[in-house]
Length: 121
Image (cartoon, rainbow, N blue to C red; front, side, top):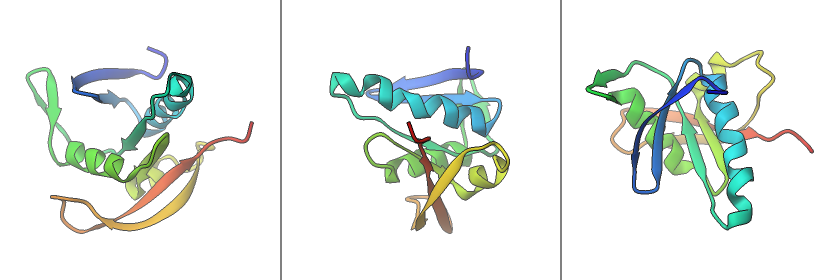
């Protein structure tokens, strides 16, 4: 696979995938909205990294919940990341815009979120 990701689960209109690095996850998520926008479909994505548990052929754990909650704050055709991801991809060439500090439903603490800035055409 181009970004070394693995589809883990799809339910309804959602998709959960794992990657061997957060920059690859972001680079996979960015073009998805652009490619399907002409079909009138809007996409939002959330990227987080952390410990997860393998449960049969699925993954679970707090990192999965955080990723889902990060995505919930993204708007149409936006990719949001946690500050954990932003810090880990330093030097990758990816750029971010702060979207403030948020409480993520069911997750302890406050989280600083960032929108991935798309490259200028």
